[in-house]
Length: 244
Image (cartoon, rainbow, N blue to C red; front, side):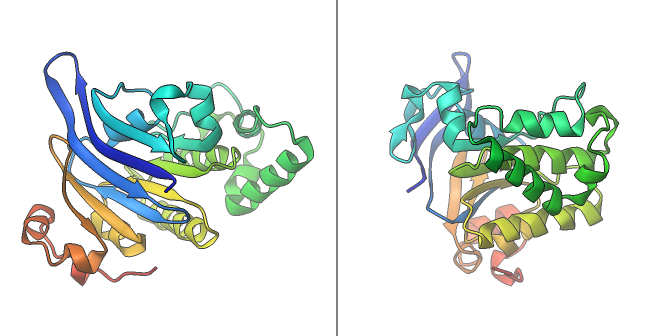
């Protein structure tokens, strides 16, 4: 199992519980989505995987090693995180952002080839190679953020709300890229409010409700047989047109 989260509790300060007893798994080559409403604890859970939020109890492991015992740089060696804020360097150009994505790698020739791979995946980045990242649209910045994360050649890619606030045509592009990555064998944890699109492309999904409790998990068909999940989402996952 690439990522395993077991009975994790997260809280802010001494009393505010953000995640309460959450467990989930992402296997090799799986695309697993984490869906739920605002405030359900989805993004907080992802931050805990990255070591940015301390775990009050429970465990989070990547390839069997606890994230609690790993430095942030070590975690990044196996996990790429595209945060909701995108996390690009606004004062740098597109090209400089991409090169920084691979700054820890020593295989410079392969880095050049991988940058070319991402420019083919996201052609707009080639067009705007010398443009300041702050001048890009939201959709263009998201493409840059994903491309940069992929340059780490991660064991698992964490995408936190990658389509939030984007135009429909860009939402389609992002989901097409996610599907293509899954077909290439990339292991992905997708955090999304767009439950329908997430269910369409995912191997399995976890439905999270506040404060960070798993209401149900499984394939779209399996979730559709859970009355509590259907009521929470407002539709039956079993009716979603699965594309995987």
